[in-house]
Length: 160
Image 1 (cartoon, rainbow, N blue to C red):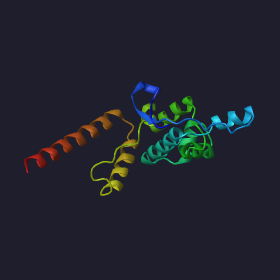
Image 2 (cartoon, one colour):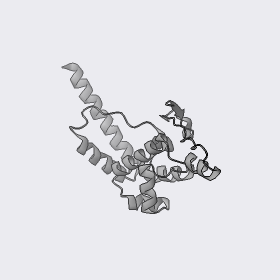
Image 3 (cartoon, helix red, strand yellow):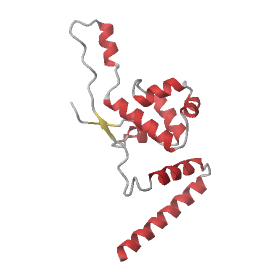
Image 4 (cartoon, rainbow, N blue to C red):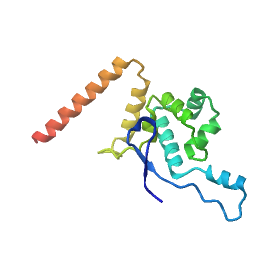
């Protein structure tokens, strides 16, 4: 069954694919049924992909993020590939480690940006540089500058 579920953290209305756990095989024991019900779903895989994408955009290695959240590199890899489900408390730690809200990890993947592909490398570089700025005043100033430049570019295109 495909649908959407509301992200519980932050109640942001972000949607993820809804997925029923794999049904237990006929005649399978209780332990097998429990093991199958813990199998990662499409939503678990989507969250893992989002973690990897945000980690890379921030210019962090698996080792760096794993150390920050207190897990092994292998465990973080299992989260990112959807092999292991991520507990809510671990999602909070990962979000903090990446400098984002939990709702960002639970949201649908980012829409394709206009011009993506043309400047994807520049965009990734800008994201890494922004993530490296620790002073909130500097981050705010940079965002303000970017918005001002984008508005000026849009006004120039509208005038043409």
